[in-house]
Length: 137
Image (tube, rainbow, N blue to C red; front, side, top):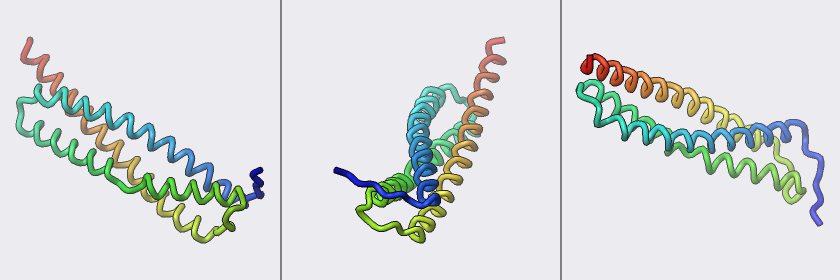
């Protein structure tokens, strides 16, 4: 039978935040897949080299974000916190704090960059739709 110990409030807080980040990453993966389909479906509509270059750059930046090594670090943090809660390993608040700071940096950067990419992509698509309407009229 599993026994659990009372973790410190700080470790519990780290666990809650890490689980939220894991959920955010799952959503990021779903949304990234959608954005790739959006990129693919709209590249053929582009006629202006400037738009094509921007779309290619946006796609490359999106791929760079997908390759960030935050998944493994986040999963290790959650696993360590769970092992501490089950009293399998002793609580190591210093190691947790260090990893938490690193994860905070990664997640903040990922969110900021992803928002910029989405904004750029949507602006490009709006430009293309606007140009299409001008050609039709």
